[in-house]
Length: 293
Image 1 (cartoon, rainbow, N blue to C red):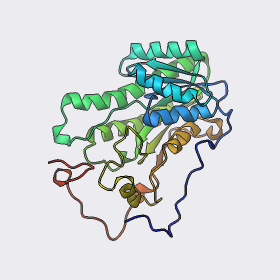
Image 2 (spheres, helix red, strand yellow):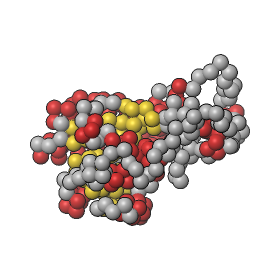
Image 3 (cartoon, helix red, strand yellow):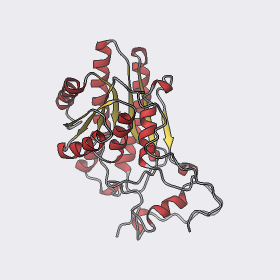
């Protein structure tokens, strides 16, 4: 069933009209992990729209360069780098490179992550580590490197973390990712408390469904329309909305905001009614997300 025509579906402004001034990040450098594609690229583009110089960091230099090319098309100064966020020495070198090319990093977006659907009992130790080490270790190591540099310089800064709405509910086939994203939310609150005296703010976005080229959201029977029928707002999110909110938390416009996990899901987490579809265990589903046979 489509969203009824009489339902009011609020749409965002076009990408060319960000909700903040074009110079809100002027003179600042933002480093975005996993910034070459998907939600990380949306974050990077949003920072560029606010006038920031942007360092795009990814394990694949080719992918980072592809993202940097798109950001450069907006007219901003951008630099692509390769880095494995699980390795502290590579993180330090990447910060050195970003600061040498673009200037001191005062904004950090932790987006790097990995995920794939698998039932919990089938997750191997290697599969568990592949997801959790990037999201948990990578987020902490990058944040700590950022904070040490800002504290040493006697300057503040802002960090935003890409978490997920299923940290409160779980999601079929996502035991590894749900655990990692929940750890990020807890980390957000703790880091914000530790670094508040130094003027460093830390927030996270618990994102809902934002379909994009490299996501699995919407890849089910009925596609995006089926997802929209599940969401009270009547639609999935536009990827640039996620980027805007992420960047917005780092602006002085929200200078008093820290230690918060902001839910951006179109009300999907509120979906409750007297008549709900029967629950089908993942193993018994014929279609995703996620069906196994």
